[in-house]
Image (cartoon, rainbow, N blue to C red; front, side):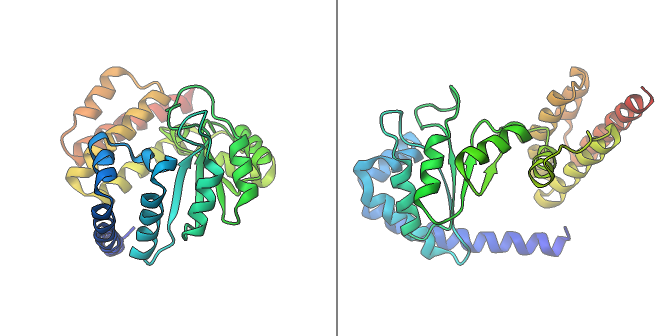
Length: 262
């Protein structure tokens, strides 16, 4: 990604965000009591409670009007297991201009406990015309295939399973397209992905944010690839991108060579 393109993307995002914040500020002033509850308790999910339908609709309208790009939405199946209202929320979102939905197969009360369920996602898909993406516990190509077959969703959204393993998207796409898994990536290919990822983070976020944001990704890679704790500590302690990248390059070059020889 070139510097000019990176700057253009940032300026475009800032422009959309500025318009969006102005619209949301106006909406929240009109619904100040509920907005105070949301702000104080950080309960974004409370917007999906039935008793504040007007605020919910106003926010959807404000967001769609504020930007010139398609607006998408991610929801859960409901507030809790006794309030599964995902279908209603999906229909409401569609009627207010949302262009696609990602649905996590748990309720807000579930957090990330228990197993995701996909029946609600299947019901949502059957009741709306916009694209629907299934999310939750999709941690392998085989699971993606099973969830798509069950829900009829247009695609899957993968989150935590990609942490430290971004190649999962390659494997999922290959299985869905050809009905077979590709060969496992060689250690030198994994090294190139990791180093390329770090370089992209530095270029997009800049020096200060780049080194900070890269730390969480490095930590996930260390977990996946059983990196020695001493190496992890050094990588996470690095104070600038040059030091951090140099340490990563040194370790993963040696790791790839050792595993190639083995």
